[in-house]
Length: 247
Image (cartoon, rainbow, N blue to C red; front, side, top):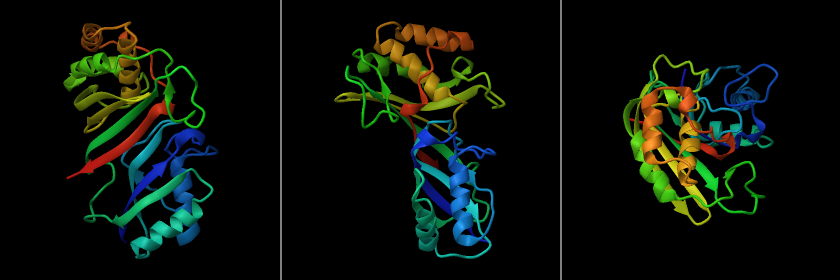
């Protein structure tokens, strides 16, 4: 039984998140339906990350076990043919490196990009793909404050109350804020993240960019280990799973 590694891109606007749910449109449901349509097999796929409703991906990774040994190009082309009416596509298909390789458990790092459109006019073409912030953001101050979050910490403050992770302790490897014209990009990299951790950090850093918080305030909120000390949670529209690292 061959295991396939598939790199996926999707616009999450129309989906109730990645994970399959009965009676709800999901990215996982669309992918599994496409696999069944071309192979006749009903299988359950595994993914590197379970993105929330409205969250996008430029490089999500999944694996699928199929009974028949299909050529990887056939898997890619056949799935995309059946995804043509969905906001999902397969960017690349290959055999898994070894039989025990797992899209989620073999991952050694994940990267997220958060996009903010920072101008007065509202977005039109990118309406569901960015967070629109009208007031000018100080990206340098945001980047400075973001460095407080880098390292091994208890991220309870930035953890959703419904998070099912066993521990709030995580190591954040990269937190970078950069302005590109009218957009401000926040990049976060870690082995793994807590539920809504990225959106919670992004919303808090925007408070810094607006001059309402300082880097000291972010540090105090982190050290408080109290969800009530978190800034506003950024909306899902601006968030992208941008890469998964495997050793």
